[in-house]
Length: 159
Image (cartoon, rainbow, N blue to C red; front, side, top):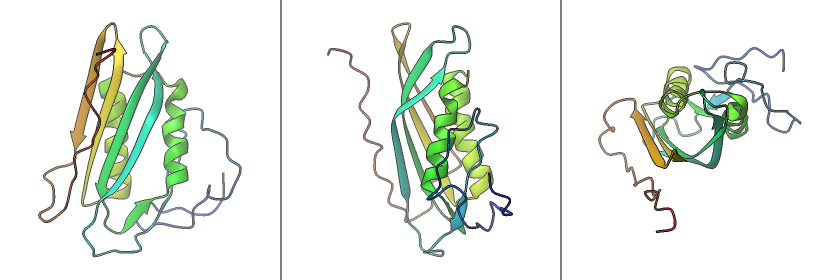
């Protein structure tokens, strides 16, 4: 990790971009980079899709798979995508229930980045024959913000 001071509220030079970086061993160890919003004052939405997200079942230790969709309307900063990828990858060896993992990711991004609005959809593949979808948002959608559907179909199996 870099010794460069990092202020999530104001953004700083990305520490991971252009660097060879291994996955953090846990979400708590993972650091997210935030950079100044190049369009501060404009109302717009950013979407990240992670269709191959994995974490571990806290009971069995077996892998759980999800398609995560993160939407947010930035204010002063935006999250740097490589640091987000490393943060999400840090869950690969993390045990947590679907609800805790999904809501925890959304809350951490919201608390650190302080966007106008954020939502996350966690579309989890079946465990014990039952798919679980988890949704969290920080509050009402800002007036005038275009928010398309997340576009993830309900799980159908072989249909």
